[in-house]
Image 1 (cartoon, rainbow, N blue to C red):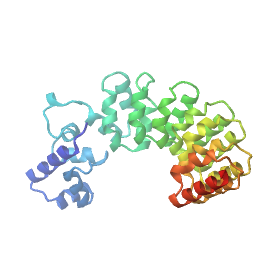
Image 2: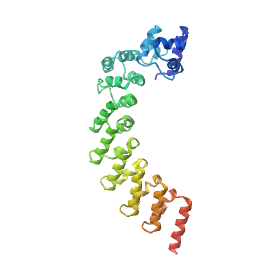
Image 3: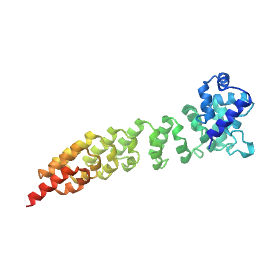
Length: 307
């Protein structure tokens, strides 16, 4: 893995060896002196377009810079500079060809990915053979690939070309349209709804609410609602409470959602128990989430009724 602090120290050494100030170096590279300061602190690297220019200025190769001056025999990756230079010259096909033929390792592409624009990285990855662009590589590149590229990978997953578990890792980076399509497919039965539970944190509220509505209507198993519970909207939770209170859905269904109910909804349920519309057994399940005063009043009322 690239050591930014070590690279920054090397950049600082090269500058000082040439007796340049950060401002003078910045002027020669047409960047801000703040950018140079960030490089030297190890907070960032020169971008793909600037790295070759920087290397030439000091009579070094890009590989020298990215390996912080280490001797070539000590370098874990031998072609980082080549990748940078080819991408800087808009030759993504050359990078892909070298990776496909084994001339350079795909891990080297992963190493430089954080410093490559998504559009440029896409041009490389779309030319990679499927035997090279394996699942573990895709997962490592996901934060740096554009949504269009990742959306296509999700489509492949839907068709069974990639194991579904991988989509959980890709979910933070795909488009909302793709996530919406997955919800539609679970609703129409062409996708197992349990697959969506793992990506629920990345679904929009309205998508989660649609799944809950399907469970209410019996199209989806209520078992999956518990996994979606933290992401259900307040409006949908209130509707569920109202349906429990009026007896149109089983009160047991609300128990798993109790940790996510607000005080108002809890009081609705308690009122239902007090009015004997709901079973007293419900109170025991809600007890951990009800304030002590309300709970004491309820218990007292129930005991009085028993007498």
